[in-house]
Length: 216
Image (tube, rainbow, N blue to C red; front, side, top):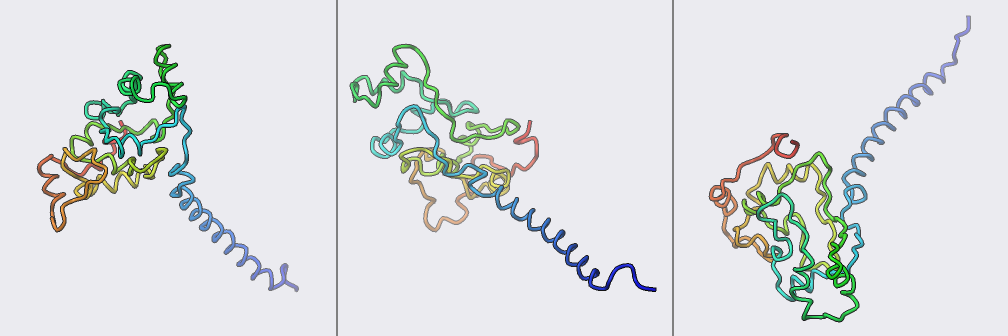
């Protein structure tokens, strides 16, 4: 009595099964790599703004502190946007006829806020508070990068859960003196081993990995 299937079908079935399993594994790997890539996280993607605002000029050239424009960064969850009156404090006298500032002047005199486009965007289910990070000695450049070197601000950090947890598990490496929080060029003292640990003790910084820290 002849067999129902010829012997070569066994090889074919094994090969097909290997392709299915291998394809599924490869698909998961590719999905993971895509989720970790800038294409998914939004890193370095240009964000168009209603005004051409050059942070290099304002921060590096003019030495304007981050807190002058982002005034609520030390007291609230949001760092805040500068009000038009803050812009006009300078530009009522400087470049007060420049076409680049037409939108600023028009919005100021019509009492309409400028619709800035958000660059760093977290999901709605994530809670983030700027003030607590500043109070604990986390510098602006830690999350936002060297803004003083950016003609147009982009997101440089992935802002993924794993990236946040990496800092929350070992915060000592990201700490600096509070007075240097907005200093874009600050570096830890050379040869000062344990400097971050000392700051963690001084500012009462502990690991924070509980789900309710960020998901409330």
